[in-house]
Amino acid sequence: QVQLVESGGGLVHNGGSLRLSCAASGISFSVYQMMWYRQAPGKQRELVATIESGGATKYTDSVKGRFTISRDNAENTVYLQMDSLNPEDTAVYYCHSYLTPRTQFWGQGTQVTVSS
Image 1 (cartoon, rainbow, N blue to C red):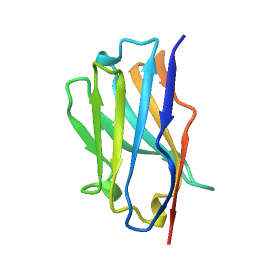
Image 2: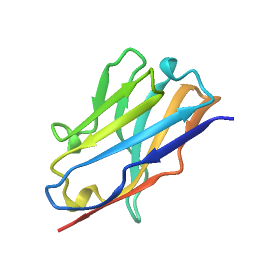
Image 3: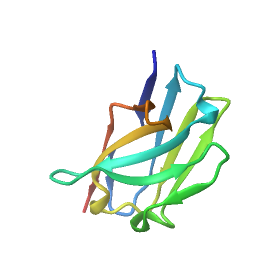
Image 4: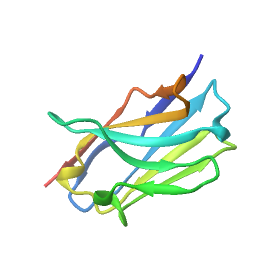
């Protein structure tokens, strides 16, 4: 059974930092592309950051220079370090693993709230 379990969300003040974790089980983690998405109230789910199996990373423009995605294949875990948070970053953050269209999985999400 595949599970992606996010943790690390919470309430933080404007300018603060959080580190999200996503622990995967039931998949060959190292070969999967891993992503973090977020969904704010009333908005569509948005791709925030991607890390390829080989370690290459990509970010949406609004988080470049503030967020860092990383992975630990030995621990089957992907991280999202979020610095200089602002209220516009408030959302539910989801972990997503992708190998093929039929082998992709989602976590349950973790709430991040940034107060002004």
